[in-house]
Structure formats: C-alpha cells, structure tokens
Length: 361
Ligand code: 5AD
Ligand code: SF4
Image 1 (cartoon, rainbow, N blue to C red):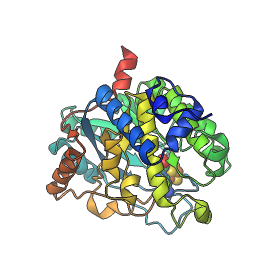
Image 2 (image 1 turned 135 degrees about the vertical axis):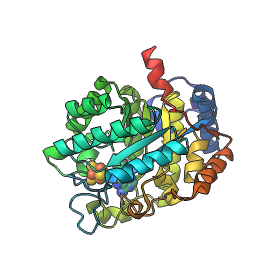
Image 3 (image 1 turned 135 degrees about the horizontal axis):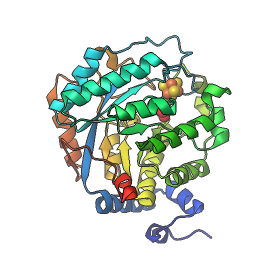
C-alpha cells in the first residue's frame, strides 16, 4: 500500500520506494515536496546562494561519451584552447566582481603538459587574488598524483559526475572500453576524497533507458559516498551524438525539467547540508530554470564567464546560457533574480559545503 505523501515527507530516513514516490510527485504533492525542500535548505544551509564563475579552458576531450557534444568523435565541433592570459583575465573578472570562487572546466585531457598548465594557472590565480578566490576543478579522471599536485597548487574542490550510478546504464551511454570504465570513475572519486578535496558528483536526468528506480539509486549513491556537492540536470539530446538515435524514446523535455527539479528537492531533503548547484542545463530549457532550482533547494550557481568568442563553442548540449563579462549589469540581473526566490547572493565568500565541514568536526 502506498504511504500518505505528507507522512513520507516527515520521515528522517527514506526507503527506495519513498524516493520513487517523491520523484513521481505531481500537482499538490509536488508542491509539498518543493516546500519541504525549501524549509530544509533554510534550516541547514541558510538562504545564501554562492556564485562560482565557470571558465571553460578547452573543449578538447579524449573521451567519446555517447551523449556529449564535445566527444572526441564529433568532428563537426570547432575545438579551442583558451590561452593563459584569457583564463587569468576571466579569473580576475570573477575576483573583481566578488564571485568568491571559480570553476576551471575542460574536456578530459591527460598529459604532463595539461597537469603542469593547470598547476601553473592555479598558482597564478591564487597569487592574483591574494589566495582569496576559491578554485574548483572539473577536469575529468586523472591519476591520484595529478589530483594531489593540483590540490597542493591551491584547488580545493573537484567535480566529477558519475553520470549514472547504474552500471548497466553507464555502459549503455559510454563506449565499452577501459577509457570509459565505470570502476575507474568510482576509483577517481575515492582518490579525490582521499587527497582531501570537497568532492562533487552528479547525474543526468531523463537519459534513454533510465527509470525512476535508477534515479532513486543515484540519490542513495550520492548519500552513501558521502558527497559534499552535487550538480545534476536534465539530459538534453545533441544531434551529433550516438544517443540522439533514441530521441523518440525520451520523456518530453518539459517532463525531464520537472523531474530534475524533483531530484534537486528530494536530494536536499535526504542529504540536508550539502551544496547543490542550480545547473545551466535547467536554464537551457526554461529561462526560470535556475531560479526554480534555487527555490527547491539548490544553493550554488555557476555563471559562465568564459571569454566571449569561445563561450558558444563549448557545447555539451544546445542552448547553453552565458553571461557577458563586459556587462556587469548581467551579474546584477542574476543577483536581482535570485532575490525574487527569497534568497540572497553571498558575494566574496567561498561558500564551502557545510557537509564537508560537519564531517571534519
Ligand atoms: N545533456 C546534459 N548534460 C550533459 N553533459 C554532457 N552531455 C550532456 C547532455 N547532452 C554533462 C555531463 C558532464 C557535464 C560536464 O555535462 O553530466 O559530466
Ligand atoms: Fe569528454 Fe566529459 Fe563530454 Fe565525456 S562528458 S566526452 S568526458 S567532456
């Protein structure tokens, strides 16, 4: 027999079937879910929203994930690498505008050159900001030694999405070879935790073959791995990728959007004190997407501050939103929008995951 929805929301722990019910909530139940998530968020992490300025260093990638627009096998994409000056200029923009921290993201590249380059950039960014700008990395699977070097050079958070915690589904959306091994991804997440990073992961929502049971398992995976930060959003099909052939089997984009918001709300309810990002993939579907995510539990946003000419080339999926560096009004617009959600942008603060701090005490 199904439990009364309002009773589920009062529990402290949640069975898999509770999670599936939360993820399927519609109408009034969805409103209850969103309200509960907003309450928990205010209670455990407060009403502050932290900015992370996203700098996309390069869209070269050695991998061939079946869903991603910048996969190596996509030869219709124009490839670029930001030069060091452009990266430093973007970091300075973030620092001057009191973003608190930045994220350096790129496709997965593994070479001594890349390791040294990131190390050099980290040191320069720390120097230009008197150590004040926090730096998160999102540079894929690397050796533990590389993770350690980057940590020693000043990075303190790392994002590496598991994409799906279901081994079978993971294998369906990636090529079947050692470069794309699920086990390697898990090992990398553990290496990051052992080095001492605050570790972020996440999944895509509404993938072909994915069920609500899978998503409930993803939420439990995040919890069981003791993850500090999560970025997860709707899967958006990209025409130059192998997964595009399943486009007629997907949930509608609208359904994926609301399901992603219910994932955010449910995650907030079960994990309480982690950092959750309002991701750009939501914004790509609906201009109100990020605001909605903030209303239902997210407390981090990652405005794209990659210099102008490159910004539209880093295309994981279509329609990625950006803000203009030359137009500080845009930063102000974002700040104002967030106010309408009843929350406040915290400028000049790192906004570390309270979960990470709570773990250490
Ligand atoms: N739709 C949504 N998210 C995607 N990503 C890659 N391709 C897509 C897509 N088609 C996400 C992956 C990756 C992150 C950088 O972008 O989760 O980890
Ligand atoms: Fe490369 Fe990441 Fe895209 Fe996979 S998802 S192809 S690792 S950029």
